[in-house]
Amino acid sequence: MTRVATIDCGTNSVRLLIADIAPGEGGGTLTDVDRRMEIVRLGEGVDETGRLSPAALERTFTAMRGYAALIERYGARAGHGPIKTRVVATSATRDAENRADFVSGVVDIFGVVPEVITGDEEAELSFIGATRELAALRPARPYLVVDIGGGSTEFVVGSSTADAARSIDIGCVRMTERHLKDGDPPSPQQISGAAADIDAALAEVRRTVPVHEARTLVGLAGSVTTVAGIALGLPTYDSSRIHLSRITATQVHDVTRRLLHATRAERAELGVMHPGRVDVIGAGALILDRIMREYGFGAVVVSEHDILDGLAWSLV
Image (cartoon, rainbow, N blue to C red; front, side, top):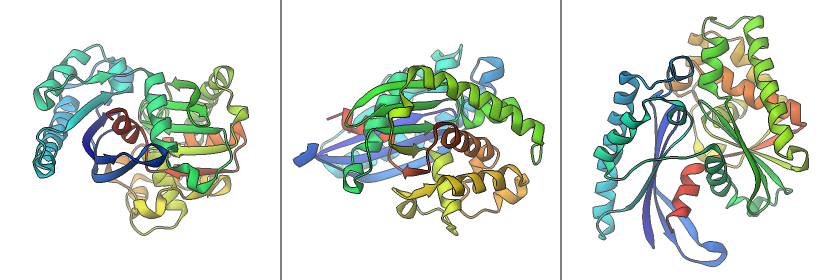
C-alpha cells in the first residue's frame, strides 16, 4: 500500500486528498484518509488585472500551511516517513503574470515545485479521477466529463481513457466577475449576457471535442455537487448522498433558476451551501444548465471524485 497526498489549487478553492492506494484487480483501490477543501478565491480579480493579489496569495498559503501539517502528521502515522506529494495549480495561476510568487510560496510550504498544468492535462487527470469507479453503475459510454471550476471548465470525451479534451475560460468566478457581480439578484440582462458568453464557449468546444458522441454526462466540482445537493433536498451537505447521484436536466434547470433569482442572503441560508460559494454558485449552476441544454443531456451523473483522485493515481 502506498500513501500519497495531492493538492489542487484552483481559481476558487484549494483542496487536499490524502489517500492509500493498494494494488489489485482492475488497477487497485484508492481509499480516502483525509479529503479537505477551503475557499481561498486565489483568482479574485485575475480576469481583470492579470495578477494574483497579495491578499489572495496569503489566503491560499495559509490554507496550504494547514495542509502541510496534515501531510506530515499522516506520514508519521503511516510509519514510512514523507508521503509522496504532488501539487498542481490550474486556471488562475496559468493566467497570472506573477505566478512566480505563487510557485516560490508553495516550494517554501511543501518542499515541492507546483506544476502549473495546462488545461488539457487538467482535463485528463479529472477524467481519470472521475471515471475510474463508474463501471459499477454501468453508464453508457463514451462519457463527457465536465469539470466546472472557478476560472475555466474542462470538457473530456472518452470511454476508458480521454480521447479528446478542451479547457475553456468559463468558470463560476470568471462569469460572476464579468456579468453577475453587481446584482442582488442579478438582472435578466446580466443573466442573458452570461448565458451568451457561455453559449459562445460551448460552440467553440463543439468544434474541437466530439460532444455529440457522448452518451453519459459526468459532472465534477463544487458548483455541480452543490446543485445536486439542492436538487436532492438535502438539509446539509452530504457527500455520500451526492456522490454518483443522477440529477435530471429539469432539476438542474429549476435549481439554476432558483439560485439566479435569489438574493445573496437567501442563497446563504441553503443548508448545503458552502459560505465561499454563495457569491458564485449562480454562475456555476448556469454553466451546468447551459451545457445540458446545448448538448442535449437529460441527466448528469455527479461525482465527488475528480482531479485530486487522478493525481493520486498518477503517483503510483
